Length: 389
Ligand SMILES: [Zn+2]
Image (tube, rainbow, N blue to C red; front, side):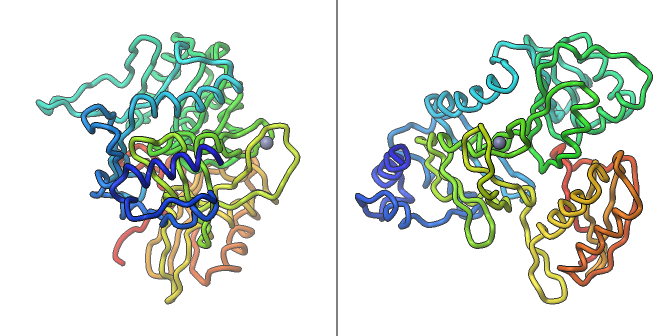
């Protein structure tokens, strides 16, 4: 609470957006007076959130759009970055005994140069980093990526579940022999992730898989433990959940650009007290950063409904689906596009439909596929609207 209070005082004293609020002694009451900030409040008004203690030219700028498509400019001082990074590396060290000097693999989205010529490399090695092009997951590239990882001998991999899922499927189905024994763990991030996806990737690479839930704005929010819970890192973010099941974040290490009660746009729920040796309150992510509401027969419904129905289906049919996408194809028509997992049975589709029908009176079609296109940002959108609206 001490860190929280310090941050709130700092915000009122130095941040234009918070100047009108008054200082209070009781930290709970004090926190209460801060308004909730939505992404569209922040977008375009970022400089109102900058602390006068810092000069903008000294700050590092990250831009994020998430799947909501609202661009946000986030500024951080070096001290902020060091303090945020420390919490993240503490987790990585705890789960995989790795440090920033260890060899690792990441994915990149190909950038165009100023002269519009394209860098044709899909595999780039730079010091201790092997970087793979996320936007082209053709079979040829996947083969190249596996070979590159095999020779590079990284300690860990950092990437989105959808891409690693496709690479895993190739590894499990091909006859090639790869040596991934140097791996200590794989950290998944950037997307909503099913337990099924995590297990599948773990099987393919024969290593531990963790789930890091973070944001460009605050970095680490929560990290998975070996028991499959997602524990909040409340040394880095103070969290609450509003009445719409949306996560509100207060970045305890964001001093150059304090964000208080920041609604990141993710639907989450508290997990009831469960015994676990790992510390931190536990949350469940209901729907990724696309927590939009859709209008169905005059009702506004959170798209979390589709995710909850899937979680429930997996309770009866574990491992049924390893990848999915909900496509809205008309006013009341939806398609559940899926890639089957080892635990797939036809009954899982019936169960899923039953679960959906409890909440929504819609027409649901099913389509099996072996590849779901990633979005332009290299991430999989779990809910998309197709055609006329
Ligand atoms: Zn736990």
